[in-house]
Length: 190
Image 1 (cartoon, rainbow, N blue to C red):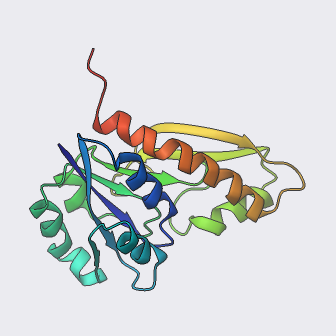
Image 2: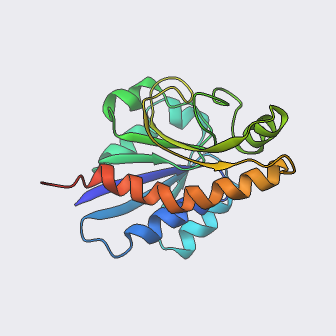
């Protein structure tokens, strides 16, 4: 059995899709959600989906309290689903190539500190991009610089607003993120 924890800071729609994807699995368990935002929608989703959820402070995140809890859960993989804080090097070292993030643009474009959510979609529209998409990547000690695992894209029309771009991207996120996680956590044996 592979144990996955999810880190989220927002509404938790991707976390919910991941949980639903693995609900019937006898090989993967979503053991816990960790959240750094006490007002995030993901907390209500976790309760509804009956997944334990821990809310933590920046101090607990940095001083090792959260990392120790993750390790006590016998965690195999950490999934960042709309989690906005930089991952400390201790986590990256404890889970090398086993922390995965989803970014709402085609990296390396529109990545880095401060580039999340609507800020990304606004930048895509302002730059006049003809396409955008999602990037699923390994996490390292820098924002959005880990090795790319998967990308999918969609056309950006001249009439598209940042909200339109966000909606198109979310369709790909919900469709692709759970499948890519499964392919990593449960690699096909041939």
